[in-house]
Image 1 (tube, rainbow over the protein chains, first blue to last red):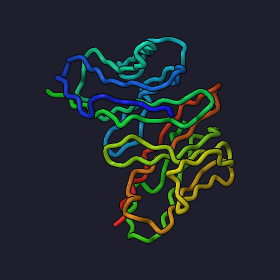
Image 2: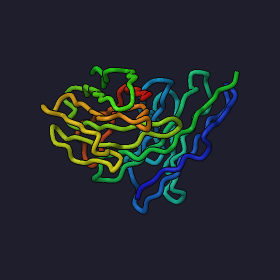
Image 3: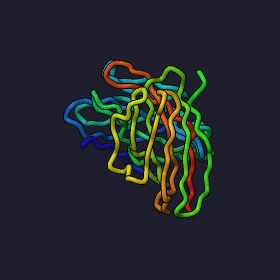
Image 4: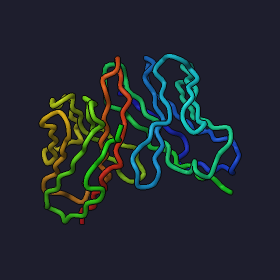
Length: 113
Length: 115
């Protein structure tokens, strides 16, 4: 069965520092991959998605992610953290022909002033 | 487009009571999904509809849970005889058919607390 692993349930960075949130998937066939952000007591907002067009995907709010098949990874990065980036981030995967998403357990990002 | 809306946003109920949640998807989105999110976890898939047809249900969806989408627009999720373990955030998402996978847009969720 498809699964997603997010290493690090909590990540802290200083304002202006690089943000790196890790996501690894398990699939022998490249799946579709997504990153969502969730602010407290809110639903999930799509940051970006990988659908096999380009391995480097740019999203909203300055985030990007790189699909690496050899590492089965889809890590999320942002060059310079902002206080407003503090939130929980979820990586999700879906297989071709299925429509449900499988989510990771999430990474809570804290941005220090 | 207005986004996905869910009602109510919060629900507190006593164990054994029935509750019903409503989801209004983005207009013209033909697929609608329900997920459950417990504290410290990612959302878990419950079920999804294409138009009015319920096409897949998770094993998480016990007999006490039922979902409908009668006219292919809004959907309801009912939980009968609630248990404390049902306490969670219930998220609804919608999408429009697009190739071999869709992009799902999520509502704000309904937080259920069972006392």
